[in-house]
Each structure stands twice: as C-alpha cells, then as structure tokens.
Length: 322
Image (cartoon, rainbow, N blue to C red; front, side, top):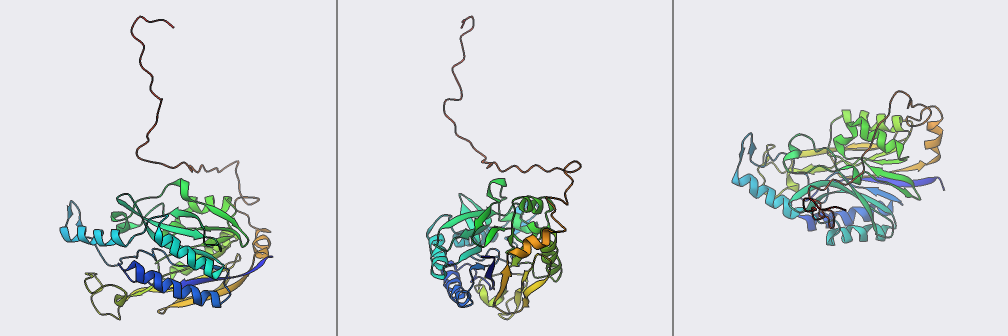
C-alpha cells in the first residue's frame, strides 16, 4: 500500500520534569492516534528538554558552581537508552499501533547526547540516531555521535530515518541518507526561524523524500521558577515558537507551518510520489557523477577505550629461535 497518514506534534517539554513530559507525550499520542496517524514525530530533545537561554555558567576558561548544578539537573532529566522511559515511550507507540519518532536527551556514562529514538507499532525500540554535530553552546552539554548511529529503517511506510536540527545543513550527511534510500525524512528541531521552512522544502526537493519536521513550542511557563534564562521570567514569554511542517518530494507544503501554539498536524502521503519525483532528479543515481565525486562514510563505532584479550604475546627471549 502506497498511501499513509503521518503526523508531527508541536509541543514543548516540561523542562527538568521528565515524568510530566511523558504524561504530556501520552496525551499528544492519543490526539495523533485520533487523526489516524501511522507515524508520529515529536521534536528535538523533547524528552529531557532543550534548556534554551541557559549558559550553564560557562565563560572562556571558567565554569561556575551554579552552572555545574544546572548540568546536574539536566543530567537527572535525561534518560537511559534502553531504560524505563524508553519502555514507556514504546507503550505509547504500541497503544497507537503506529511508528513513533522522538527526540530525547540520552544519558550514557557521564555524557549527554541529543538523540532520536525510533519505535515500531509494536512498541519495540528499532534504533537510535545521535546528533553528529551539536551547534554552538550545545557543545558544552552534549557529546558528538558517530557513524554507527545514522540508520535508515525499512518499514511498511517506506524507508524511515531522522536528521536532527542543524545536522540538516550538513551536505555529506544528507548525501549519506539519500544513498540509504530514505523516503520519509524526520527532522526533529528547535529551529523556529523562517528560513527553516526553506531548508525543509529544499531537502524534500533535493532528496525526493517526504520531510516531517517537528519543532518545539515552549514558553517560560514550561520551565521551573528557578530557571535563570536570558529571556526573563514572564511566564508568557515564548522561548521556542514552533514552525512544524510536512513537505512532499517535490517540495510542496502538505501541512503547516504552525506557530505560537501546540498542535498536531497531519497529512496523507503517497509513497509513489517518491518514485515520481526521482524521474528527473536522483542525486545518488542518474543525477550523480561518481567519476568526479565520491564520498566515504565511516559507520564504525568509535569508543574512546577498547578492551581486548589475547592480542599481546610474550616477547621472545633474545637469541631464541623458532
């Protein structure tokens, strides 16, 4: 079957309150299920939060004790993958009988990662993608992913993958995803600028893929009272204004963008439109020039410490013969 219904959820986290965020997520999943969605996409850093406006007490050559406490609070809001919060998110997917894609803050050892999780309609965790390149001050609090987590999943809805926020501006990553045959491009983000819309339509057109971009809508009221952000303390202040959108393989807007409110936006898609689009543009096929340009993608996991056994043999004594 080539026709499917998909949805993106525009909502904000209850910052530093992961249980409350998950409650809100469950309610939004019920709304999306009522729309008949077979795939539901949530924003970047939704579970665990995007602490917009915090500086974590950092200056060049200096870190403050208050900033370390902010990081501690953020670390405690993050989730383990897999873990109990993953199981709860999976239960939302199973209840909807739909695929679910969501941004989370993943805790691994002493490092946090901006991660996207993919769940099947049975609630199983299919896999994850860690953001390869945190942007600007995000590098203070997030580690970098590696090539081992840039998956594209074969699903009944087509080939599904995700690219997070400004990773969408990385041409090599886009080419890698196109080469994997992605047909449904999930773009969880917190970028609420107008130019983001141009980027999403461009990627849809360039890759001949459906693009589902879910952006947070977050106000100062979504953060705790003890939240020393640059935007001030007015509960009505909008920290992230949204802009969620769904685009077709010819760059046409199918739903959205929506600003300055929570929303579930849905669209009907026809996977055959991917093939129709590639009739005249397949950037990793007939429109490529491998005789001129080639790209190498390293998908090996890059652990900082490797433990091995039996690698080193005892050195032979001087003068010994074989």
